Image (cartoon, rainbow, N blue to C red):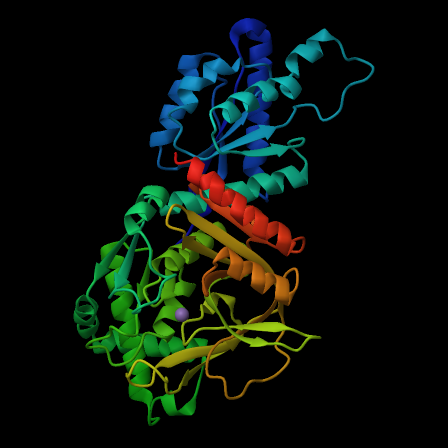
Length: 500
Ligand code: MN
């Protein structure tokens, strides 16, 4: 469903005619070599395309215009091998609609101490040429990522790679459609928000369908389709006896399969990249979509419960950003705490819908009563989640802006069996510590719903926030609560003043 190799970033080298044909030929050769090397780098999941060296305001304007309308192009990498007087860039940069990375590199890693002469100096000018470019981007108040280092430096390549992943997530949102079955869970604040503003800011739309529209598609699912999905389940999972063929509750498993097929059909027919539903509006459905949501998330769809369209969209973006990396990206909720002072933990879960993409080991298919919703017992996948570095991310609507908050966490292997807990679950320790991490999250207004990522870092999410031009708050190992509380207040002033 997600293939990053179809996407391109364009490598654009700035220069000017002053240097003459021979130098410009060499500049182009060098740029071509660098672009090719970036394209082949393991750290960079998209293709990097060399574009002819730009030397005039018209050439700059034209390549940016072309980038804006090329659907495969998800961003621009700019580099000034020589000096490119930056007033030439104003007209082009003023129409730029794609994310920008400024790669502050140099063709030669080392100074050739014995042979360096003025010809070498004139060709290798990025140390000052890139400063001229940096000035105009700052002067124009444009967001961009600056990466410094030789073009074969693995650290620089990883930074570029993180940015290309963020750009892929951002690109995926442009024109994306998310469907909301029913409205928001009644009275809940953080899951609601301004969908018009979100579409203007983020590029995706959220529209509602009454649950009846979905029920109609579910009711058209054929017996054959259900049978074939049941055989898939039999191969993939450990199914409890009561749900197996001949078991007392097998009909519930068939119902779950039917819901899944109906949902998938609805999403495919509407071209949706994700969905949200609410247990308060399930008229005509026999059980809540538990296992169906879990499996659809594993296929790449964004999802969040209770009408939470912002988290559904964020989960989808995280799946695109993390495509091809080991580990998964999942809808999550901070559910309950272990306040042991020597081993404080958060248990993350949801009523049902924890994404199969983060399962460790073979999930089991189980059926249990659900205390709320008033529907038949829903079928769900139950599994544990591996330990390791991870993060939680949340986008909230502050009224005058959106804020992306992340908390870096360390997931820990489950230490107990939890035989009576009928849902998938994750255990983690928030950074910098339980009390600071939780307090910082609450001061920042972070939601109880998050996108939980095993393969993205703060760098991916920061780059993503810069592309979206929204506020970014990181809670991590070095977070000091006093400082964070001040930063939140300072940001309030920034966003009151900066209305652009
Ligand atoms: Mn919830």
